[in-house]
Length: 322
Image (cartoon, rainbow, N blue to C red; front, side, top):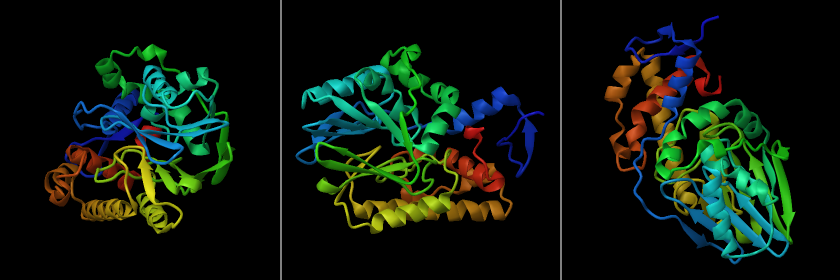
């Protein structure tokens, strides 16, 4: 059977065979991030007596918790060498062994440093869907990371797919050095597997791809925008945290969640209305400009995001996962 994919040819609802390689290329292209890099250096911010936020404006963030019994890390960056750099930064704070690594979602910029942490002896944990998707989309993830590898002169052959040792469904707790670290899954956000991590003793919440402040998220992976909006509402209503440590973007706060929720609701409702009217994709991309968000980071990817929403609304599927 020939593989088909939606093609932006200006004709609403038309599909044509493009072949598996062509469909994969389209899926990878639709998943790209177009925001230019600024060259801002990554920094480590101490947000509590035992909790540290690795903030990389041009890349992905990490968090590490330091206890007497060892270290827990969330997300490992985009290549084993970047992972080694993160370990070096941790070593400036503590020489305690790295015991646990949580991968908050499947994206390579949060998992491709895993090999460095495996060599350090860490145990890996993810939500079940993250583990499944990591394996499923490995070739596509490698394809869309090539520019990053070239920019940093990293050898792609050093990247190894390191799958979790432990998975969970809805919730689990890790206890380390007298601290509880609570992993929570509320259903698909930016993608299935989005894992929120609460540090109750520090009243700090790590958020995965489902949240970033004042930035338009990549819409190529979500399987339910409705659930995404709902889970943001639920997270905003929680009273067990004061500070947010996001997977992308700087330290944030509760009110920032409502801002993103409002943007998602606005964008999704507008694009759904365009699809219902039979508006061709090309026309939607030309006319749905959402100028109220023009100063948000990643606004430059808007046309791609509209295309990604068209695919979800018209087919109910995500080509990236096929």
